[in-house]
Amino acid sequence: MHTYGQTPHMTDLSAAPLVRRAEVDADDPEAVRKIIKGLGPGPFSIVLMFFSPETDRVALARNLKAEIPWGRVMGCSTAGELTSMGYDEGKIVALAFPVEHFGVETLLVSDLKTCTPHDLMGGLIRARQLLSRRYPHFTHEFAMLLVDGLSEREDQLTAALASGLGSVPLFGGSAGDGARFEETFIINGRDIIENAAILTFFRTDCPVRVFSYDHLRATEKRMVVTAAEPNARIVKEINAEPAGTEYARLIGSDPALLNDNVFAAHPVVVRVGGKQHVRAIKSVAANGDMSFFAAIDEGLVLTLAEPMDMATHLKGALEGLSQGATPEMILACDCIFRRIEARNSQKSAEISALLVKHNVRGFSTYGEQIGSIHVNQTFTGVAIYPPGSTPTTGKPNMVESEETR
Image (tube, rainbow, N blue to C red):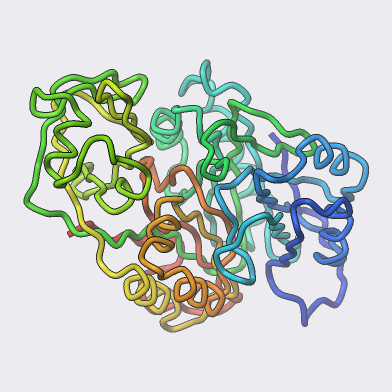
């Protein structure tokens, strides 16, 4: 557990953004050096780094060790990047949080397979207490989780974290591997690791709003999971029929034609805590078994959903976040299936323009976290506002969510 940001360096950076950002090509051998130059002088409480799977990880780790002057670097691999161009690929995105406005505390979960709620509780409580004591003048707070996107442990982790978070709003994203789904990685300091997660608590003088939105509308078509392997997130039967076959029948498709494009266009939702959340489909095996990106169990009722216009919905969500005050930056975790749907519906350019207009940075994920829930196919993140501003929709630190209708 590490704390950073308690010794601000009084440099006149009034013209600099509250959150510095830089982006470089992932295959640039000078990538780390260019990031350092692009972010400008620190000191920084933390630097977040999201890197394309095209990145040479060995070289990145080596250069992080050799070049990085900052106290702390956290990040993960991506399923695509959100840059100054909107939807992007083949990039490394870096976001630096100056000590003048941010204090942080980080907690490493080094082994997701063996971690228990008891293991986490002491660290969570200490992190919150330390930040509260060291930054009493920073009255806004949030937490960000970055987790191995192929660990299949996000549901258990978010549930375990919930009781130790108190009133701190949490969001996060599952690390990606483009469209390959083979290996995902977490940056912890100057090391790049697997089967791990990083939780970062932020305290700041900037008002913040944590949010999670989806653009899906539930239909009347429902199905019941009648056989499953919950620990593996596998559904074997739906309505007492082979899962893939029954899903294909309900959407009017041939089971042999099921793929990522179909899953993005025909998601399923479940009701959790009075709200509906997407359970994104990962794949369908030859025997009809369906693998999911989030928790699944026997007896669960799945409802087919249909997308509303993604660009129109995102425009409304971003404009809502800008009521009363304009975010200085929005840090977002955007599901890979939204990117796929945008491409298939020829909305990528329109959505990218919206992301650029509203200063969105971040990455495409294999899943998102909001509060105690692991979700899919959402646009989830935090809006960070200038100190002293007063966003009029919702309250600072408020979790904004939109129930799937």
